[in-house]
Image (cartoon, rainbow, N blue to C red; front, side, top):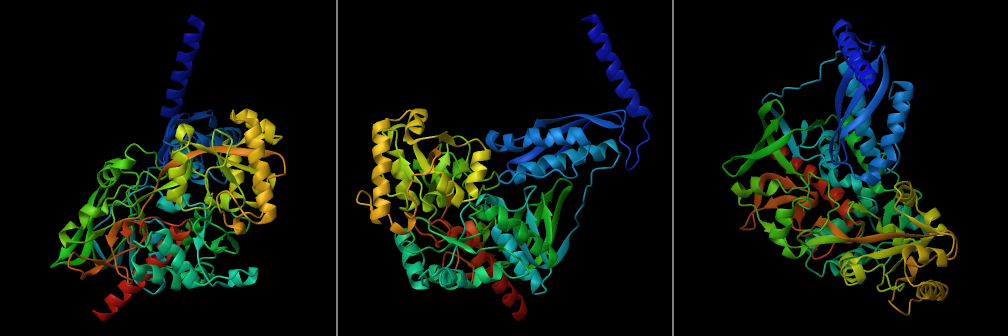
Length: 576
């Protein structure tokens, strides 16, 4: 034991001596233990890297806020490859854990920089001016930035988190649109009027009809815009989602998650068009000049500064990660889990009080029915749209799986244990790339037969087998006699082993209420007048979705109104 302590002391002294004697220069790693930080899915990731004899000998994660299921996908693989090669070059990030993986890689690179003596970059921003300032670099903010910058406006985007994308990063479904070229190519009959009716009905007719009309009428146009060379999205796959009469949710070929596909492309487009996107820049106030928005006050790690602007666009997202606000506006959702990223805290609502900005439908908060308990990991509605069913611990179906999210959520909460099992087979798995991510995350329970899956789930085998058989008969008959499920979402019998299940429960997903806007994305005050030079788009607004949001409408909402907000701001500036 004494020899071991003596050896450890020598090692520490050796490392200390190496650090003192090492001449730090680019490309030369000094011996010692160095730390670095990178922005992950849920906040900063801190790593330590040990250098011995000028080479990496160890690397560890000191702290992070990532979910264990997502982190398990990448932590060990990235660290082992890094320790083996001494570099992050060539390390691929696993799909489904991109943000966590990129955060770890950034942290490792920061630690290597520290070993080389490179000072951590500290940008000190000074007071400045621009045409349009955008608060938030989520989906709506990035779309608005791309549009504004592409039209020649000096555009600054301010994001309080260390990464762009916000909740849009975690969108798994797609974007709803009607009467598109993609639908026509696939022989899908749809129209803006049917899309309008579905959205109004899904929102229990609490939606603002003018906003919904704008959404549906601009939907085909926005799909074309997203697929233009400027952005380069792939929205060629069209599927079925809850509350929809027809197949209209557009997504990448094979059914990949829309957020992971779309956010990097809009981000790159915004930068390529010249938008100045600043991370870890938190807007703490919106400036007013006689009731007109005229800029923002910003806080950073090095102090505060002011940006004067001709127009301000609010794209800060919702408040689903602020439990106090959720409890204030809808006490029935107190203590619910959330799918939201940590920055979704409703910061903008205090900032607009000086403008007497109107709020609308703040109590309308949606839960997503299929979220893995305790993780915040959402299982996309597309799994159900491609043929999966929901069964309770009794082994029976209990709901039309393609009902609106509020109905499915309520019915799951009414089941024993307040959770349910999402069940599908190999054919469904092969039909949707997003499922591979869930498999890699270790979320799937697998059985070689229906009977084996029942045993693993600890549910009655006979009832479960009867449920599967009955459902398959309904698929063949193209009619669900039990729950009236739309046959367009019943195209696959569950007959191909292996069989899979994921336990799920509702969690807070989308705050449908927010700032009141008109069809030009102008923020409205409490006497129904537009507030000069103030615009808003995305989840920070209310009125588009009413009492329940249809899956696929959020991406349509933030893209369409993000672009409209930019165009309206540009028009306002031109006229001044």
